[in-house]
Length: 166
Image 1 (tube, rainbow, N blue to C red):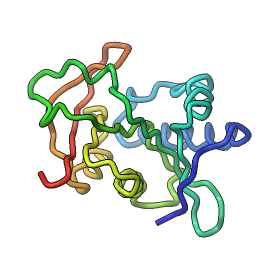
Image 2 (image 1 turned 120 degrees about the vertical axis):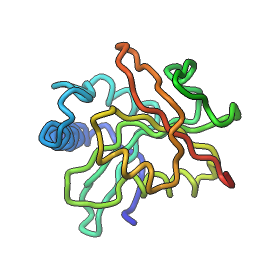
Image 3 (image 1 turned 90 degrees about the vertical axis):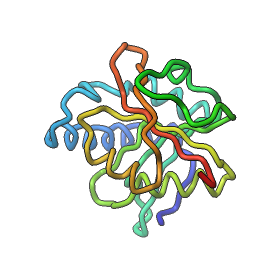
Image 4 (image 1 turned 90 degrees about the horizontal axis):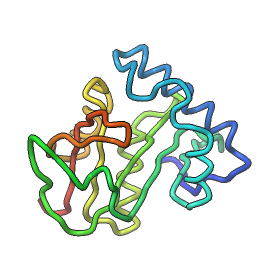
């Protein structure tokens, strides 16, 4: 596993470059609408860094190769779910904005392992229906598909949940 640490404001250009690479990968692999151009925005990433919720994964070379957001407060987009139900209403942490420069494998699994090391026993995540690589990674980490949620712009996302011992 790479070294995981909080992202810093002075890394913003490098982080936006990683998001560009991840966006291009999604577009080239049948997922052109999950992250439209300019998504996530510089403002959103700056806020994530300032809020202390954006993490980077460094490789053995000391360079940043991946990013993810980990929040431990209720995600408002998860308040309504259809075509299913959450497994449990207990407090949870959520993984968002998982992105890689394409040189590091198992990024989502590393983010999940990190969340577990921090003591989280209940995790949620969502992804676009066209993001097949992410859906595979989510399933491989033991998450259960729970239904459909809608993000701020109203577009649907497939929702997943992992609870320790379930």
